[in-house]
Image (cartoon, rainbow, N blue to C red; front, top):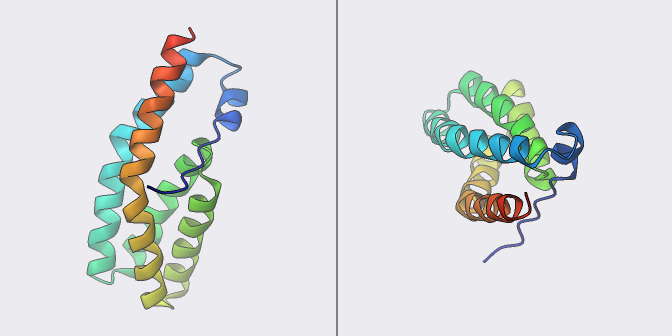
Length: 120
């Protein structure tokens, strides 16, 4: 469907190669991120600059941990523009694109968990 590039090398380095820890971090991402994304969607719909920036700021490092570097850069741009209270239409467009990727990201991470579990 899309070109989701998940690179867990950073997380692997942080985890010292501990697959159980990596799986746990993926689980946390999968539990927390949908709520953050939903909250960001609401904040954007309400044009609540402060909440947009705060929620984007929370999501940003989790994308880094999951090796979603392109998505992290886009989320950082949303945060920056919200803090500057500018480019609302661009925030909406970038978020819509990101939001459409999250289901594929969740599936890809579930698949990574299976791979990791099989190799432990």
